[in-house]
Length: 252
Length: 296
Image 1 (tube, chains in turn blue, yellow):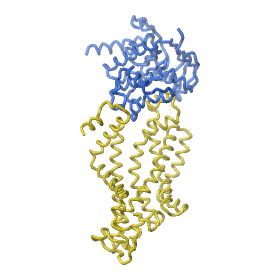
Image 2: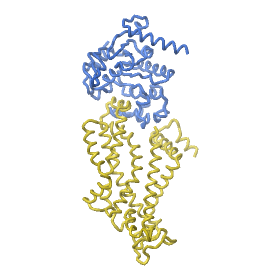
Image 3: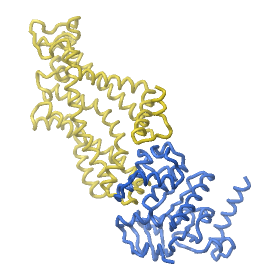
Image 4: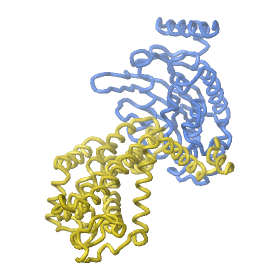
């Protein structure tokens, strides 16, 4: 299996604070890799460095065999796309769904925008009636579907997901996760999923990195976590906390 | 009628055009619910109609002098009376709407784009670009508008075009400020990050994604500013630096009436009322538009 993403010695500093410390991990092609940790642990910062949004980092990032510099070439964006946490903030409030989806097609000069947009919407389970709506006419789940369609319209091989469900209702969360897992199956996507919720990560990912204070404290397969084959006390706490939260939900 | 209503309120518009029309219709409904804004809109519409059909509405030739009939009080023949040269004041006010509109339009066309461009570029790029552009803006902001306009007119020479240029040169800084503030709010938002992740160039981001966000607040600002622009133009006219005689400009008309204000009050009063009314109309409309356009 080829490596889609290799990160080594990644450091990110914001002024005096050292947010990501010497992080290294590898994601295979077609693999789903999860990064969990509490807020402020630096997990989203890693995604922003991977995607090229944050240009102030040191270390090495290799994507699909290409070592990446701070500034990415246009072709990079056709390979790697990202879905943001808050679907209420990630869609332009003054653009219809149609205009939002037409933009990447126009930027990369792909042509045939009409068909691509219809196909992208159908792929995320939205019918044509949604195409000319404004974001304020959509629900949170529908918005997140549009955001996913926008990411996938460029047919990337790697999809970065920054807490894609944490701003959504619990019932919608499952829908969006199922959609992502279907899309991954259909397109052989490589996913990197960042979340504070172990259950969400467990739904999609085979391998999980646990982050604490900017460092990856443990990397484990999902099976190892389920069977309790964990070495770090912090991971154990996280798993226990997640079980409690789940218990609380099922008890309701 | 119900077909049109369904078309405009459809939850699932079928085309770009329908989506845009539906958006405009929702805004119209919001504006309609605000009586003050409607009053403002009515005044502005009346102003536009008066300018368009001035020759039909005016009862006399606005430039025709008749020294036998100077300074006549308002009557059935001369509704607002006549001025020192025997010209009909009502006709002059009606024709004056054209002058006012020309000034407002010239200023708005030049000020809006300049302010928008400087503000968005400054806010989006930040750093040195921002510092240089904002210091230039500060320099222009530091002068009282009328004083700076006076200085420009003194250099350029009196006349309505030069008055417009002078007002435009003094009016753009607040627009740049507004656009910059708005840009700084959105430049780090996820939706801008998302287009950046699609590989969009900076030019594309500023023109297609940031400017549309800034335009509504600039429109509001412009409408609210219209009153100020009209007043400045009238002020320049009053001082003899704007429109030149015999052009029926409202400010200049007030200046002419100043000598007679105690004995023939109508000469200065009616142009003054016209300025007041139009300024009020634009202000009310701007206030209403702010509520309508800001709603997301």
